[in-house]
Length: 373
Image (cartoon, rainbow, N blue to C red; front, side):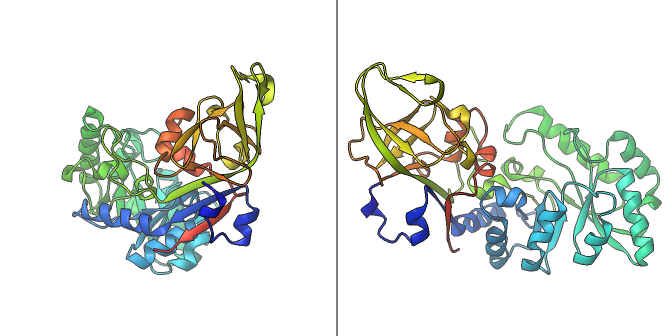
């Protein structure tokens, strides 16, 4: 992209080595799409990891304005950072109840997701001390083997409901292991395990599907879905065209262009050498900005829809591209790293990771602009 193609650049953008544009309207549109696919109950907004790298406060404000009334984060500090924006919404912390954090949950009306008997006991104790009933979500492990009541603790709780004295259970939840793979037996096995787990617990609403789980069909529907990645444009159905809108565009400024001759090396440790005369553009972005070092010699960017391969090693602040086939590239022009030509899923495939990691790795040094919903 040529500089004249961006006449509206603000002064901050003119100084930036890279610019991340975030379309909040696309995120809201994705939420509406997911709502339509989950008629059995509301659809929450998972805004953990700073809204999957795109800005939790911006995303939360936009979703709340659109009607979202359930939000999930991973950590208590993440909840505290957005509570003022959604004072009347259910705001839950997926990471469990850390001992000693109970007063903050009470003061800010944040709902803990309880995944062990120890956490349940701590929360009932907090309820007794507060002389009031406290809200919680119960997490049952049906196959992930990370957080959640395991089979033994679940059986104990099923046999003694008094362990929940003083707790109002808003939802019982579990987490799907492989919902992006449509026909694996594990999806149905988890569905059956979850139903059996809930049958032995006090009656409560259920929360089941994540982003990809919504696309498994109505049997995986519940009283509350918890999509995260799909809101941010990650494909929830990897074997099919992406039904979600892409809300991000990342472009980086070309700082210098030089010609190299056959045999010349580019970047640290001389891992790439020119086989003939080539034009090399150095862009102001690197692994400190979330461009994975594993993209060295494997990634690419785009200039006016022309792909330009990444050559040499990605360094902390700089990345080099072979722009021989893009003669319009010059200092001050822009290369697209994320956008319609290359989605987070595409870049992830080149980096050997997933789109989640691409988004959540996005750094803080480039200029961010938000398009309102």
